[in-house]
Length: 532
Image: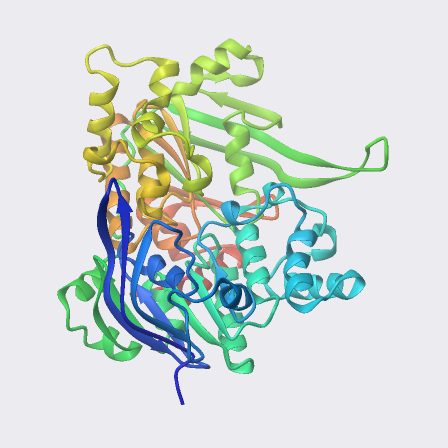
């Protein structure tokens, strides 16, 4: 009996400026029904390219050689009619960046219903019932009230859950999950992994799982293929690879995790930003006249402060208000309550004062592909703030861009490239460079390492700690990866459904959490991470 998916001697190259550049070379593996195979490796190693090749989703610039068979049918150079039948029905994808995969103009009900109508002919009340069932399965609270929501009205984790629901809608034989838990908090991540494992068993479904999180690989995969520079350097049963790695690169991946603690906050450090009973409520409006009938209470009376050289970690489940709190502090959304920045009450600021202060308060967003303009080169993106706020007068913008690119681990020779020409991890580094080039006083880091593989994650944590020490930066560090939070943060703030349930010194909170919810978060994180 043949494998569900059989990849043999796969080679993929891309045409660029008249030349062929190899992305994948000689890759071979199989996925059987009821089996999970994980592709792991650093950003740019060829994991996603390999997966996208399975149903010819790479576009006309790709040259593919070798063989990919699904249920015995050849997919390389297959007829478009066969590919259309297989895509989304027999083989479903969960992509890494949900904001670019979801249509911003359509409600969740319409987007989930589209797949059901196209592949199963299910419409109307039956479709709505199935959609609600799927949203419940992936952990979206009160799904009936979310049916008419648009993607921008959801948190990053909630958007990823919608993507997973869409992929599961038609009961595929093979599910290809490309970093499906990247944007999820640890408690929901555990639920999703259990859901995927359960579906694999009950539906006899094959699962090709792409990730940089080795803790997840160990908990979910039957077999693992380690990729580096477009090639599989080691493959085998998961326990064998983890227990007795043979290749030096595999050993490096397994040993890479964020460790240590940040340098102490300098004595007498001044307060950079603070809030006093900050509240963000979004009105719920109904009817022709848009009468307010209630509120979504995103943040309730949050009081906090952060000093120069200090990192305040903010943790909690998706939708708990973490990002909303940070955006309110940056004066990017409306709020009530006190906000102080650099010793000044920002509520009295004019538009001109606020614009001038933007240089000193920067943000790195969770989804780099959504926050980078596809029409601008890396150089233009990173230098954009210099055009608004000016340079230091010593170096040219290009020199400053080259310098910051080296600092964040990017090759300055690539500054002419566009975002789509970089891997997910490289795009996040561009976003970090764009914020850091202005040497701000306060930086909001919204899941800045979620798209990065483990080895680069360690580098970025060390980079951020180094920049903080050198320039006395204050960080608001939002993350669901509690190991990274521990390595970065002096203080940690825990949020649940808009409320701050616990706040304290990092080590004290991790060693002796006081609130039941904090203990639940820590427990879920330790269950699905290596070296725990």
